[in-house]
Amino acid sequence: MDDLCGVILAGGDGGRLGRDKARLFLGREPVLVRLVRLLSDLCPEVLVAIGKRRRLGFRVATPLVEDLLPGRGPLSGLHAGLSYASRPLCLVVACDMPFLSPKLLARLCQAASPGRTVAFRIRGYIEPFPGLYPKGLLPQVEEAIRTGELGVQALFRRVPHLLLPEGEARAADPQLLSFVNVNTPGDLDGLVEGEREAP
Image (spheres, rainbow, N blue to C red):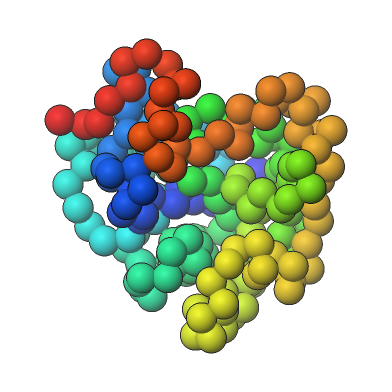
């Protein structure tokens, strides 16, 4: 899609995990590098919202952009991605989602609609990532940051949106592995053997 910018949110400090999420490896490859490659197959532009510039220990072949309104969690990264994107629509994922399915992302992109956010509803809950976020959403994101309403799901409910049903997600990704996040050390236990942090 020519009007699509891929955005990877990689600004979290990984407090619960005890390490920098942007430096997670799966096997011998950084998850971040894998995600850049995946989004590059769908998007003519890809950005990594890095939060604050820091040493990754490996090369990422796409621009790293820093938060303009830091310290507000995922909304800061979403704000940065929307601000720097040169395309009208952003496909946003998180850097701790190692098993994103290309088929699931393609289904999400097929549902793109001007001016609407798009995501999946899984087990009755909004899963904001992966999701499609129009660049025109920037004022609402800035307002949410200004007022301290930092929940991405709450933002989603306040703006025009489309929620795709769980059945459509399972048709592309039967085990819903695309929605696996690495948040704690325990979350690493079930991942591919050899996962490690960058040296």
